[in-house]
Image (tube, rainbow, N blue to C red; front, side, top):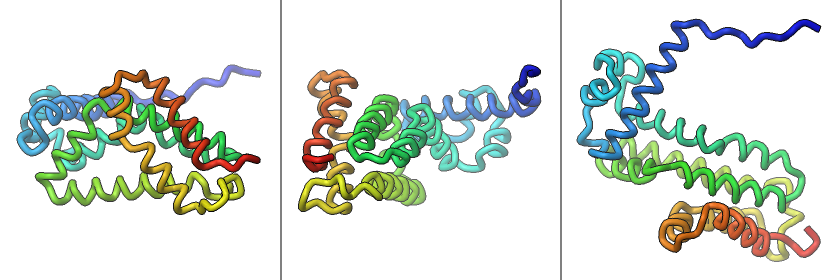
Length: 206
């Protein structure tokens, strides 16, 4: 059988991707250091080494750059892939282990993005609506963890209450309190969270 070669990405497309990535990373540094509201697109362009018109051509608005920063963060953390993997699992115990891993990766890799988003939302109503939408999407995803495996839940629990417990225990605040505040390692956090979710949600037979 002949060797299968990966499709080659045209040079111009690779350069465009690198330019976009450079703008996103420059903006992430600047928004974290000086704040979203105080950072202009001109400053982002200067920091990333491109003309301001290039930034406008690629993103159009600062809000779009902020969205790209979040997309890069979640991609780096592998959040979407882990959620998709979890929903394929037929047993809630395994799903909860993946939730714990996803939560650990999400908060471990955010490196100031959450504070950046909250600060931006405080000064920009459109960003506030965008952030509220993201939080709503996250809540919906976490509630969906028990869909189809409700039979594994502890007696007296329904899917809505179980989803609320998952959402509460996977919050960034709890991760920050334990890892940054108490000095836990991310591994310890993941083990604790997976164990606690199983103890609280799983029936004895699951």
